[in-house]
Length: 318
Ligand code: NAI
Image 1 (cartoon, rainbow, N blue to C red):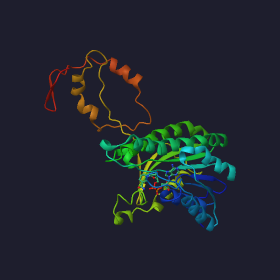
Image 2: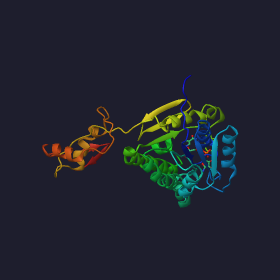
Image 3: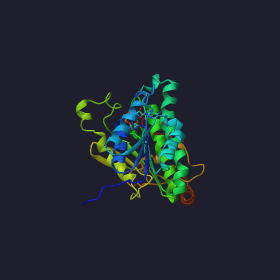
Image 4: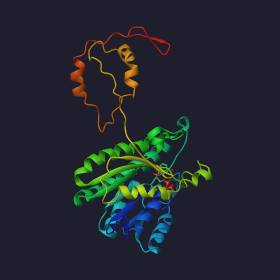
């Protein structure tokens, strides 16, 4: 018989697991042998209020199917308490799914500091606090799987979501660094940018579209990335509606200019095409090797002057 991915004996913490994608993850892990901590603050999608009902319902669902789960009602901003629930009940933590989130959509012009702060607090500080509390356990046991939840809004920008976009892209940088720091301890850290029907998206997408974006079609990728057999780390995936794709950075070959007095704004404009051309791209895992490039650049003849260049219809001086 074909084998299914199992998580027996492992403890999985899913934040924001009282509904939407988080619930889907939690129920899955519960059905595959894991001990599940179902965290949910139980407030509104805008981050107002709290309650135990959302988490309890998912715990009951997992238990009724013969799985093991406990609830935790803390905000992710109190990550220690969530990880403590895992340790107190199951003695370990193996997988952390940072999934909890809220929205405070408003155009930048009308954004209140509170809308900014709350979004950053829940998504970024919350993910940080949970990961920070889980990290010593991951390191000690030389095993950990961490998922961060980004968003297309963070990767590409999205009208009315500058707070959310900032928070979601922050999680990418955060996770890339944890992937590097965790590598030698077998702590694998990846990012998913999901798209799925939930209470968060039901206000912004029509029902016929939402029907094609079930949360159960996001869960399998998370399952694969958090399994003990995975070796993937530091990766970013868009996932939803049956489409799964990896994203990466692309760097243009760029231009090399002699670093001396001739490196003027005009000299840059002379090279504008090369700087912006992706015809010979690379896909970097880190910053350009500035020292090596500098060596080559120093050998170049002085940059031709870009005096009084016509750039987008304007006269530009060097
Ligand atoms: P959802 O609103 O159904 O689920 C989020 C859950 O997090 C809720 O149950 C909520 O009570 C909980 N939560 C909120 N603040 C919390 C806090 N401070 N502490 C603990 N729990 C808290 O929304 P959905 O769609 O399932 O979202 C899950 C994640 O996926 C979020 O991070 C969201 O930003 C992200 N996402 C979702 C997309 C989608 O298409 N549904 C698109 C891109 C990203």
